[in-house]
Image 1 (cartoon, one colour):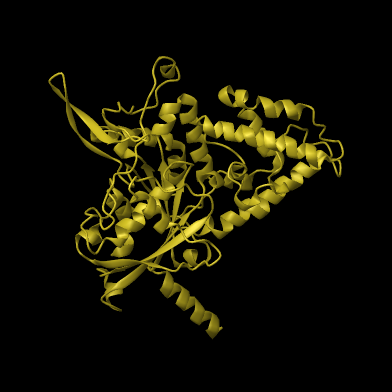
Image 2 (cartoon, one colour):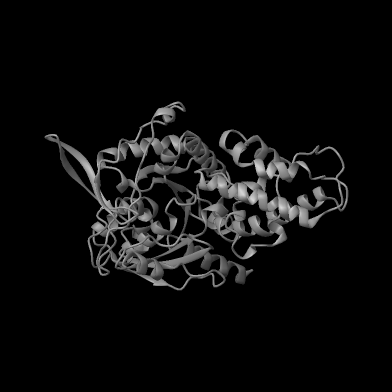
Length: 458
């Protein structure tokens, strides 16, 4: 009993404002890898540069410094920070490679506390910050934990409208000739699952975001494994499933995927987070159109249902950690002019409105802002027919220098008929070339840090 009590006291002492685990959440191309690279870079420069004025502890010179530390989980690869820096500071700056597997990075921040309870023990305290990077596609699988094979199949067929219906034709044609009750034909199931995977890739390439299972489009080490060879199908759930049939095999693979892939991923990573930032690229779906925007909104709503929210206390944190703060961030704020940033936030609020409502019901602290993790443009004004107009300047993806007014961001989602005669065209830019000894240029990364960990640095 004394041994158990001693261990409990040690756990409590380690958990009080000494460790924060942050979920960097977002769909594919939302900028998770760039965000983590910038966050680490900003904190590593915190003792030598005044690069984070909106982080109160940095502004008040209470942060002594930051350093990278070996991660606790030795079974997970290290986040490729050095590789990201090499790409960003190369002669031709490039964005870090998108994530293809899970990785982690840990930082230690030494600071001078202002809370009396902390000052009693030492003049300085250390906050350990754990950050996890992972493919955005994998995140889309979390809702599967609450669906059996029949329920999941129903959701997929219900979504076959508009563009999805067109893209699914090849898969549906192959599915039409499959007898679910016949003896299992693994080669046939493999062939149809490949057609279903191509359909998911086509959805992603056309600007749609809700693709399930997410591992099908980025399988990692599971590529070619039978656990990734299933697909939704229509059947009467009240009828008995013949043993050894195609349907029995599809159901078995789905259940194996749920338990061995999705549940394991959730248990090892997402069930332990304290804080969460949800990155959303609002500009890309505007370029793609109404269906893409609504599809992204639906995907975010489904994902948010999978996280556990609730106010934390010591006992809850020891045995059932929960996220108690969420930040929604519209990325690529530097791709529009500064006066459009409030519009970007307003549009983001519409994008995440259902998820916001659910989290608000659980009494979670939330905020919403626009950011640029790594700045790619400079803002200013240009003269157009004697009038001063806001503009941004940067290097486009093809290497040409552009000085443009990229257009207005709507404060609300335009109606579906808007896209019949109008189109948005927000450009992609390369990162700004900077000295390796300087922190990466950013927009509001200090405000992000103040929101996520400011209270932990007091």
